[in-house]
Amino acid sequence: MSHHTSTSQRLHENLGNLISSKKPGERLPSEPVLARQLGVSRATLREAMRTFETQGLIRRRQGAGTYVSHPSSVIESGLEILESIETMAERSGLQVSMGELKVEQRPATEEEIAQMGLPAQSDVTQISRVIHAEGRPVAYLVDLVPVDILTPQGLSGDFTGSVLDLFLSRGEPELVSSRCAINAVTASQHVARALNIQRGDVLLWFGAILYSSMGRVVDYSFSYFLPGYFRFHVVRRVGDMNNSHAWAGSA
Image (cartoon, rainbow, N blue to C red; front, side):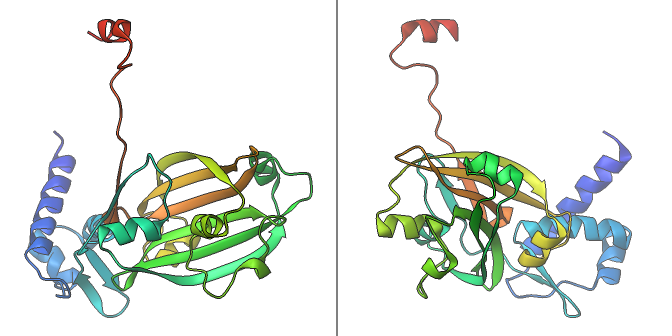
């Protein structure tokens, strides 16, 4: 193990112990004081603090300092069933609300036209919104919907932030499946500003395509989650339970 690796691990362990010893809302020492206490440079300390911030364990406030903010609940869910954040949060006991909402109609890009199977020069309705929990933004969601399915004027005043829930409540279009890609990404400047984090912080990213019963793409979405507030899992089956040859082959 290199000296750099051991120093980094020791810093994260010491900083983690300090954070866990504090109550939510307590302020940590200033960066210069904390750097001296932990025996590292301020630049090294900031990198470590970014990790704990994206985990939801601390929150830095410009000009006010850094405060402990242990999440009281975590949205934990399997991915076998498509659900909105609002539905998952209700089951997890974490109250969420919609923050900034931006709705616009714009021309689809070439990549979006290809992904959604749209005719050339089609328009889409773009719905971008921030989801808050415990007084801070925890998710940034973007949905692209063909305008013949949903226009900006089609969103009512009681829209709570979930295009999926909106479609389900309307009963149309009839939804059948979703294909989702999952990755860890670094926050762009735009996403970092929306989530009040640092550019380059690591986030969970979902890219999903929602299909109707007619095989049409009715929603192309991108979701960015703070890791500290979300924990996803997948239930996997080992081999083919009805095929003895599969079991023999895996022995």
